[in-house]
Image (cartoon, rainbow, N blue to C red; front, side):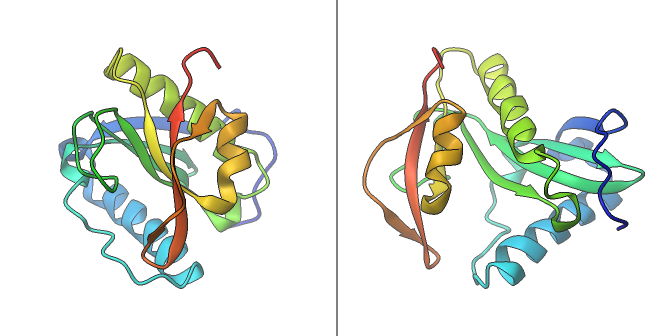
Length: 164
C-alpha cells in the first residue's frame, strides 16, 4: 500500500455481519489481523476463535485497501475471560500503512456508537492491551480489574462510561 494520505474524506466505512462479508474483504480482514496481532506483535494465538460469526465487522477502506478494522460482539458472550454481560469490542487494528491518521480513535468512536445503538442499555466491556489503557481512557473507558495475561500480552478489562 502506498503511503497513507492525511485526508480522510475518501475513506469508506463499512459495517457488515459475518455472512455479508465478501470473500475478498474477509481475506483482507484476516490477513491484517494476522499481520499485526500474530506476526508484528509476535503472539501465537488462535485468531479464528469462533466469535467472528456472531460479530458485526466495522472496517475502513480506501482504494480497495483495508485501513482499519474492529469487531463488535453482542452481550452475554465468552470473548473476555470470565465472560461478559456487556457487549464488547475487539480485534481493534489499524494497518501499519495507515498509522498516523488517527484512525484508531475514529474507529473506536464508531465502534462505541455501533455497540450502543445495536445493544442499547447493555454497556460495553473490552479486553484492552494494558499499554493502551490511556488511549481507551481518553475514549471514555475505565479500568475494571487487574492485569491478566492473554496469549503472553498483559491485558485489562475496561468498561465504557456512557456519560463520557
